[in-house]
Image (cartoon, rainbow, N blue to C red):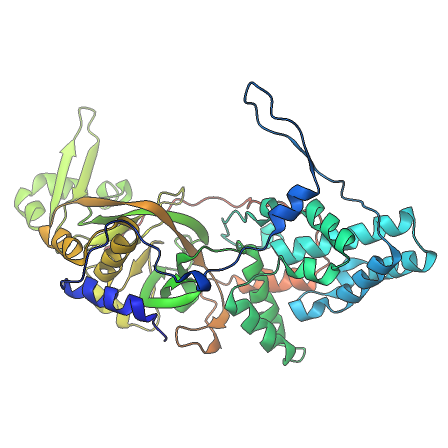
Length: 455
């Protein structure tokens, strides 16, 4: 694993609480030349839409978007046919895009038939390259809202393509830019038909489900790999083993959320399924000595409702830190006192949340980068034993993903066990006819994970 040199000293200092200089404010340590350059699609789109004057009352500006069916010259349509015929290199199937109808329209020359056929083929190619071909009902426990359809709208891309004549370049401008997508694409080019080729296609499509621009600094955990990456400009800075949800109802869902801060020495509010269902509330209230020894504080309200909170301490079930990442699933990344479990090869053991190896190091590092703490301040905060929330000036994205083929933390392309059985519906959808007019949000039940970090 390659570690960015400027981060190595920071990470070591964070762990050892050495006398490294403190940052006066959150900093972006990437040199300017290594930042991801954003494609100028928004500028192009702004140039091809008309914008109403902003009313004096401050109501939102309304953009008049170009229609989905546009005029296609014969040359542009011929170029579109050529691009669609080679779309298999992106893990897509040319048969999905009605090429026979497009070729027939090309043969008849310019006109309404060509405009309709070419506009439809182009729009479908954009949707699949930008958003993924897999329909939402085949993306099991997938709750990521991909913003790319709003960032790179189909109508604007189509106008750009027909005005510039660069059909291939316009379509490529919405393809994933993450190095793993390129790695899978290269592997696809050398892989014949068969199970491996299908798996490559499925995992290429998973990259299209995510935002094209993941951010300059982010956390990404690949659930089947049991690994978390701290990533800068798509370069791995640090990796951490993880423990993820058990298969079944407590399987870890796939999310894209924001970490708003770090909570050092967290408390754990015990779910009622444990307080009442397992009798913990009665034991805490009935045996104060045992409760104190295990850090539990129990209260009974006037209506008899019992609440149990485990206080900060070495035995706290959340360990010494958790990441503050509010979401409707109640999923977060946290420490654990049962650190020996990280040595097990199969680490699908939790009730849904993601337990993180060397969590104190991760917490201090993020506090340095996103909140301006010094390594000494981070170490002192942990040692204090007091509940402390360190808020970030700028939230950092976190992606909880599910790739069964990709580059591991050593840079080797490999497969990972499909621990939740989420490959089958994706593979089936790629073999089935293309679904048009797909919803952007999952219709699956949102399962709120009431995590029991004790097990």
